[in-house]
Length: 121
Image (cartoon, rainbow, N blue to C red; front, side, top):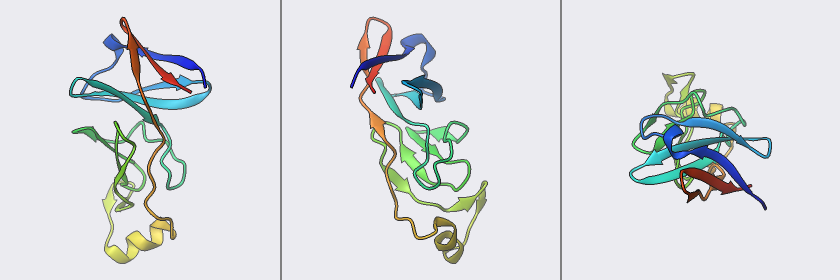
């Protein structure tokens, strides 16, 4: 693995995610509290991008199926509860999840050198 610059501290904020790239992989970066965090921009449900999802309190919501992930750990905190923002009843959630169990998003440790942010990718 190689250390790859993903952003500068001035580009990262607590109210939105920054979409960037590292070795050709799409990455989301955000600040949660005083910590910079990064996850893959790829929902593990169908591999769709998370970047346009709602981001609040350190959690990003997949804009396609409503799955929610902590941006500092990649942990799945809610799994497939909507379809393009429309809430689904329990039976439909099971159909949309297509038998896939809740899965975490790939997470990266962010290091800082001066005002530059890096991950190992």
